[in-house]
Image (cartoon, rainbow, N blue to C red; front, top):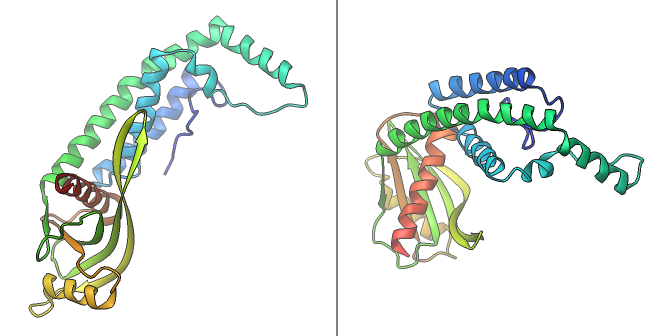
Amino acid sequence: MNKLKDNWLTDGLIDYEFKKYQLLAYFKQVKESFQRIELYPYLSDLVFHYRNLLLIKENKSLISESFPKELSPESLLNMEINYRKIIADDAVMQEIESIMLYALPKFKDSLEEGSYIYELVESKCEITPVGLTSLYANEGYLFVTQPPESEINIYRYQATIFTQSSESFRGINTEFLLTAERTLSNTYENLKLNLIKQYTQLPNPAVYLVLSKVKVPYTQTLMPVAKRLLVKQISKAA
């Protein structure tokens, strides 16, 4: 993955043509990844950079924070003065604004393409509880499968809640347990019973099955979609 640095805008040479070349190479790889229906890690990367550019556009003082701050032998005072000179340089600021003007619609277009593919994949997936629904849904097991539905990847999951900017968000931690074979006798319900016998610390676990109706790249696409579907399901149950 040709990943952009977090501070790509101000890292290295601040030159419109150089940054344009750098971005063209990056978006080429994003396009190729999306054509293979491989959403991650590029989709989350696009979200991160697009939001950062919007913040910088709205608050130009954030540009100073994105400059690489490598300590030199000179004192911190001299370094601070040097940075102030860079930020005060109108030519540099105009170059940065030109780069952002070019980059923002590119990130927006790629993000929209990735979001469209994500929504399409999600529409082909369904999440259902296995057996009786547990009253406690914040911890349990996740089954993930796709055509031909002969193998099921089983994970133990735990929901987490974190706060950012006074807003609460729910996330999911997953731990891969095993890959099981599904047969006429080895049903999803039987797999659940086997888990209860094997892992006695969860006597009445919540178990959810995410089934994709289409075959897509597992690690880069299906698993991230499955985790997001699980987050939505748990949020409804909470």
